[in-house]
Length: 231
Image 1: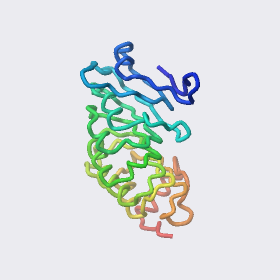
Image 2: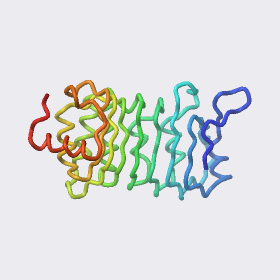
Image 3: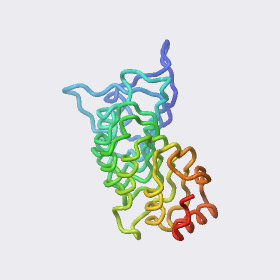
Image 4: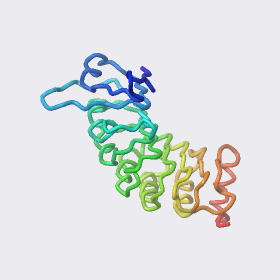
């Protein structure tokens, strides 16, 4: 179901009550709702959630931001019974914190997009990657400006045996990743990691701030192995 960018009369952003939505459409498997606000469920009202939900894509553009935007409570109520969730996209969410993601009941998330989320720029974000470090395939951490936060995320991603790593692509564009953390990530993930976006990463050496994939990524990995990536 795709209801992205649906406008209410006289408003640039629609607001949908979560309880009525879940009661009316209990079998949703894929929900795409970019720039849609959600009204949380009040006391005394319960739903079964979306037990079949596998993909939740609710990116939010700052232009559409409203007080009823995405919060930890919104995430909790949208995913309350979604143990099979595989994809989560909350790009641009102004108020969702790492603790809100840790509460999601799914343990096998594969795709995670948390670009431009102000409250994700915190070291506690490492808890999120600790939870899903054995299942994540695709990660978008772009524009996270906290070096300590990125360091913790890398540590958590690497806190699993190399043979169990599934990560194939990671977007670090505009992030504060350090060369040390980058080297650790690439070497630990081995040949499974195939693409990494380092555009606009100010902490990295000149010539490294670009998208690496395919043969270019393999050359970057070899430079890391040879210790020849410091300039």
